[in-house]
Length: 67
Image 1 (tube, one colour):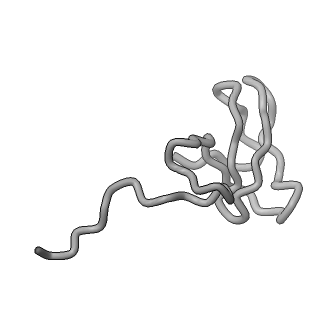
Image 2 (cartoon, one colour):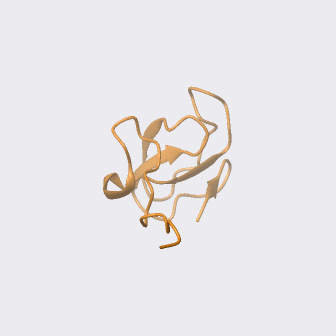
């Protein structure tokens, strides 16, 4: 679920910009800012389990090759 600039942070966590994968730490009650790197306005909660080293999302499920 995406969080958007101007919304109130619902839980303290590290958030990942959906555009450039920049990570920012936000505390519950903070207002979500624009990304300080690219200026975009949508974030999700960072989950290293599903991220590559560069912060981009890795596939959650193996792709079905039709066999």
